[in-house]
Every structure is written in C-alpha cells, then in structure tokens.
Length: 264
Ligand SMILES: [Zn+2]
Image (tube, rainbow, N blue to C red; front, top):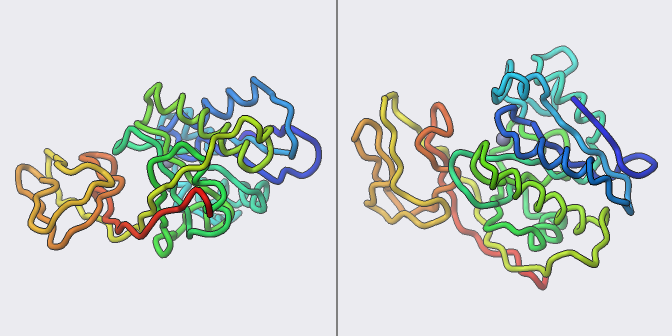
C-alpha cells in the first residue's frame, strides 16, 4: 500500500486507486494528481492499494480486496491489506476508483443513497448511481463507510484513465479539497438498486445481447452460453453485464428506483 498526503493534519478525504490490480485507471489518477500537487483546502490522502496485485497485473493475489473488508490482521494477504486501509483512511470521505469489462462510460456505486451520495453524485460526470445495499459482503463500505465507488470505463483503456482523472478532480471539488469555483453544475442522475446476480453456466462461448442500464423486456433473450439463450422471466435493467467480466456471473439485475435531483 502506498499513501501520500497533500495538506496538513489528519486526512479527511481519500482517493484510492489499485484496489484491483488489473485496473490501472485509478493508479493513473492518483499519480496524476500527486504529480500536479495542487494546493488543497482540506487534507487529502492518495492511496495505491494493492501494489503486489498491480505488479502482477492481476485482480488480486489471495482474495478479492473488495470482498475482504473490514479485513483482519491475521487473514489473507488482502484481508491484512483491508485492515490497514481501514486503519489509515477508515474515517475519510473516500473515492474508490475502478474499471470494468462491461461499460465504457462512468457510473457510481454507493452503499445507500445517503447525504453523501445526494451531495456528491449529481456533481460527478456519471451516467447512473447503483445502490448496492444488501449486496455488500466484504466490500469497501464494510470498513470505509463514507465511500463512493466509481467505474471509470473499460479496464486498461486510455479513456478509463482519462475518466479517472476527471472523476477525481470533480470529487475533490465537490468535497471542498479543490476550489469549488471550477466545479460542474449539478445534474439529474438515475438511481438503480442492485438485485440478483445473473449466474453463468459452464461453457466456452459467452455472449450478451443487452445494453447496461437499458431495460430488458420479459421474454427477451439477453445473453447466451454456447448458443443457449438466457431469457428474462420479468423485465429488469442489467448492470455490470458482460460476456467475460466475471468467472461465474454475467452481471447483475437492477431495478430503476428514481433519480438524484440536481436541486436536492
Ligand atoms: Zn475494480
């Protein structure tokens, strides 16, 4: 774990990249901000989390860090790392940077729609917010509760790296680390509640036919394993849906529950 702070005193805000070692966008954003070394109005910690996994170019070494919170000093490599992260930035208002194999745009994941989500998300350049309440076993929210996770785009893409920098600057402006003068005007952001995982049968060729955040109708085929289609029993919005983003699931169902309004 690498930690560098800007500003004096205990950090109140944190930006974390490299939670997953095969998602370089967050590392790029942390390095870019540290290099720019802007004058800050509140102390902020920049963290590169799982250096060993980053070195290997793997999601994790022993266990998925984002399923290992709150961590344990005697646990797996990532459980020990999670415990150190909680000790270091557990009280901070935190931005955690990720990327996916499922979506080229930007969206946020939060534990619940609370005051933090309401104030920050409409000022981030994101397409949606996903509320993960109830599906949080071991996620960062279990140790660093005031976290907003962002997905910056396709894993390893230049676009995701650029997006991670844009999101980090927007976040830091919103929480008062960088001057608010340059921050973007708030916008309405649709909210989805995360539902069940969409299991993937063992097979060789996986396909998806649906677009993330766009409703799949009842009776519609939205994915296939070796040509064998998966058909929706009832309408849903797919999120994190991709042919090969995860080993055992295609992605998740979600329900559109409302919007965060720019004037809230
Ligand atoms: Zn990730």
